[in-house]
Length: 166
View 1 (cartoon, helix red, strand yellow):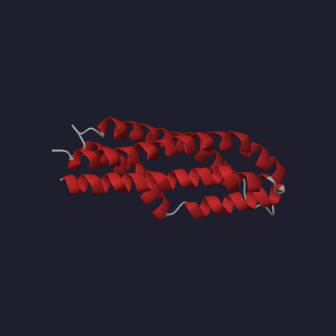
View 2 (cartoon, rainbow, N blue to C red):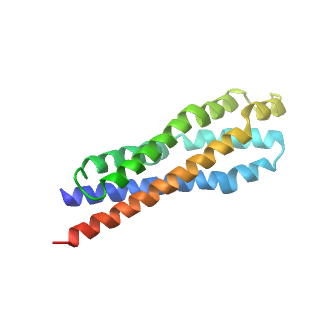
View 3 (cartoon, one colour):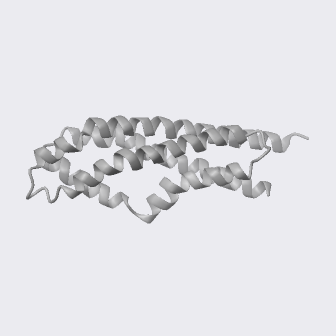
């Protein structure tokens, strides 16, 4: 059972780290870069990236996988020293999922629903998208996911430490 617990905890840490990386890249490079483009480029590029990211690998292994793996790792760690840290990481992951579903996805969907950048008022679509709101909440996701990753890494350390003690 200990091997399975460690493997799931490691998988939870890895997938949470990957999600933190996605959010941080959006905050640090993608959105600032798009922010410097004209309205048509912004709308077209954002729509294309949003369509591309909605795939089984991202959704299953990353976005939902990190949450589910953290939950299962926590359930297998009941009574262990690392449980409190895993539980906090789970809550932070859950908050990022809620923010994503409640704020970022509706903004993404509205921009996609605006239509083809060649045929719509791209200035109006970009304004309605509200880059500042999207980016602010993405920054929150970045911080929460990074902290969750750190907590899961700490949990792995505690798990390894307790395995070597008599």
